[in-house]
Amino acid sequence: MAIPITNAAWVTQGPTKTGQILAGNNLSEAETALIGTSTIVLDGTLLVATINFIDGTQTLNAAPTAVFAQAVGGTQLAAAAIGVLAVTATTATSFTVALTAAGTAANTLKIAFIAVK
Image 1 (cartoon, rainbow, N blue to C red):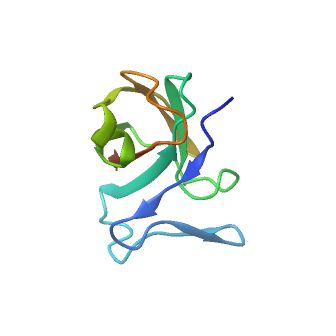
Image 2 (tube, rainbow, N blue to C red):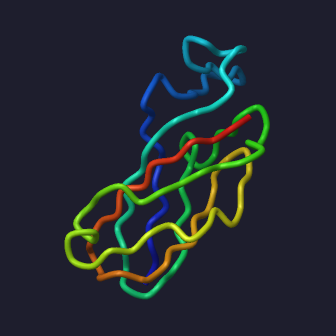
């Protein structure tokens, strides 16, 4: 079993890629952080999940210097609270979160995050 990799949903207009040009949100050059959410489906065994910034193949211009993440919703929190222990890996493509528990298979966990340039 595995926790499926998910793509981010952005609070503002998030990054997209057309050809080889990265388009940020309206503040593009002045923007210092990307803010978004992602809902993962737990598998009941694994303690890590990967979240893509765009689609898993397209990359940001550079890897963020830090990503802050927190569990904020989903069906798992109603069953038994689990949270984000740490962000363990960050690249220009994605980041990985370590969870405090595996949760129950098929339950969801919504994670909010801020990726800082």
